[in-house]
Each structure stands twice: as structure tokens, then as C-alpha cells.
Length: 488
Image 1: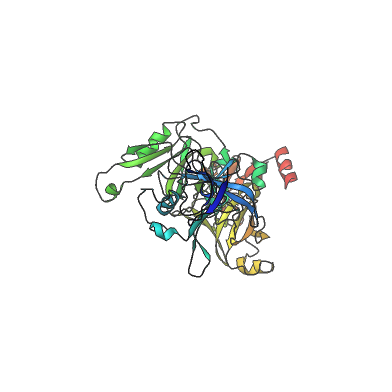
Image 2: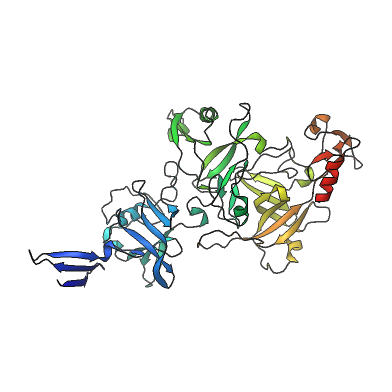
């Protein structure tokens, strides 16, 4: 039996032989059904087809990434990194268009048989003849790339996913938010803590975060909702028509399994009509969270009030950021000496005011009394003398620079490149006794009373036999005070 190999005009390499019984040619093997890392016009992405990346830029051996149809959802696709989901199309398709493959790509992958409706997108919609100079590549970096041979005779990138570190599937794990603008991109939501602390500190965020306290405490007022703006989030578990936000909120509070809700006003209601608005409910762990997402949704995450407010003097959370005492975002919270922070309620982002300018805060670490800010114009990070010129802290300031310029890159397990702004690590001094105007202001600090100090201000001064411990933020005595001093 003789076999022949023929390279077709379409680019398909076909191996066939002629059956002696009926003299018919039978295809034994063809490259269009056995691709490596590249998909070209004429091929069809069905359940049996997969693209496998190269091992490296110049090594065509099978690599770590595979692109194929999602076996669990219709008209969706997935990239696997060995046995782990690396990217999925339509992660948040029921709420917002997130990580969606465009109709043009669906049309391409279906060998021009898809009847999906075209929508406006960043990638042009092409008639089938115009796809002749295009290809889809599963890159060794884990990025799926759609390329076109342009007039300059080079392959131009038209579309790619995942487009950044936060586009990776559940990049920060459950209950953790991702911000691709930050060097350390992952942050546990307020009221949550890393599930695997050692791994988290090493930059492995895959374990995500877990609640500090269980839902549905001793009374119905033990839980509150974090208001998170412009959030991307995985698909909800249930939905129903709701008249208003309060109905949606009550539905969540009445169900101890409810983790979060989102209320979406219908377009008819916005125009003054009586259209039905929708309440989305999440009863499972929240995944694929990303903040500052352009088409994001307002998300209300349920937490125990004790896990977000250690004292009545704490400022309200700002997006995914807790503002620990004594830091202050307004005149009615925190300590006035630390009123250098501002919360953008539209984006949920915190900024820090210094004499040298206003800077974006990327992370706050209450236990270590430090936070991270981004510096856009630190042209020479090797020159440490610039820190005084840029931030201009005076001697009386409770803030000081600890580390200068990208002090600790996260060890995120992705080949996607990242180049962010330079970052500074800033620490704050332990605070003096809290300010007060009446004895009731001192109720969160036992063994203290509101009295005048030498500078004329009124503070919650410790009673006799007690001394203010600025680390534990309490009036202590005896062994407790000696232990606190030994830890300083």
C-alpha cells in the first residue's frame, strides 16, 4: 500500500492512500486535524482539536499551554497550563463582557460557519476571504495571539488573551482582588486573610484568601457589606428580579450562604419606566476578582463587622483597602496627625498626600505599620537622595520612607510581562493617645479618660497606674507593658 503526502493550497498537509477494493482515495492523516501551536483559515476548532504551545521561543517541543474548547460550557474556550485553568473566555458573561472572545474569532474558529451575532469590539470583523493572511497562535508564554500579515510584511498582533496578569484565570485565588497596575497585584478583601500565609508572602497567590470570621454571627447586625466599585467577578450563582437595592440586600442577609450581591438597574427604569431590575447573588466563594475594571460592576461583599472595624475611630474601607487606625481619610476618623489619605469612592482607590505631591497607594499593611505608593517620575531609582526631594517629609511627620523603588517584586507564576511604576515603601510611627472631645470618645480605650495635654489638645489619657502602649493601642500596666516594650 502506497501513501502520498500532498501540501494543499490551503496549507493543509494531507497524507492519503488509494484503497485497492474501490480505488477511492482515503485520508490517513492531515495537519489541519493535528496542529501544533497554530490555527489557520480552513481549520475548524471542534471538541477534538487543540493547540499546544512550543516549549520556548526556539524549541518546538510541546510546551506547558493548551488551547481548546471548554468541555463544560457551550461556545466557550479555555487555555490550560498543564492541569490548571490558565484562562477562560466569558468568565463573567452573565453580568459583563469580560475576557470574551470576539464574534470575529468565533467565526474564524468555526471555519466561517458560526452564526453568533457580531458586536463592536477591539478586533475588526472580517468577511471570510479577508482571513487568508491571519493566524491564531498558542504562544509559549501562555498568551493566545491573533495575528495578521500586514502591508509591512510582518505579523501584527490584533488581539491577545490573557492580556495582563489579572486576566489569568482566578489569578489571586478566591476572595482576593487583582490590580494589574500594582507590583504586588493581589490583595485579600477587607475581612479576609491569606489561606496559605507563607505561600502568599512568597508571591504565590493561588491559594487565595479566607474569612476571618464565619457569616451569620450571634445577631443579625453582625454582618455588613463592603461596597466595591468597578469590579470584575466570576459568574453569580442565582438571580431574580428586584424592585430596589434594599430588596436585594435583604435577600442576601436572610441567607447565611450568601457571600455577596450586586444590583443592576434596568435601562427602562433608568429612563423613568417600570422595567424589572436584577439582583445577582453569589453563594459560593468569589473568584476572578479584579478592581478598576472599565466595564465592572458594583459588588457588595458580606463581612463580619468585627473584621473590618477594630474601633469606632477606624475610617471606612475604601474599595478593597482597609484604612487602619491611626491612618485617616477624613476629619471624623483616624488620628488628625495622619490625615494624609483620600478615598476615591468612584474607583475605590486610596491616595496619599505628601508635600511633594499626591501618590497612588497600592497596599496597606496594618500589622507592619507600612504602606506602598507609586511614584511616576522617579527617573533615577538608583539615587536614594531623590526620596527626600520627591516626598519631602519633614522631621515632625509621622511618616518615613522605608524602602526605595520596587523593593519586592511578587513571584507571580506567569510568563506575561509586567512593567509598572516605581514603588516606595512608607512606614508610620505609632500614634499618641487618641484625640477626644468628651469621655464617650474614649470608650474604645479602656482605662482612659478625656483630659487636656500639655499642648492644649484633649486626648484619651491613661488612668493612674496605666501607660499608653502605642503598639497595641491600649492603656496597659504591669507585665503587659513590660512585654510590649520587649517587642519594640
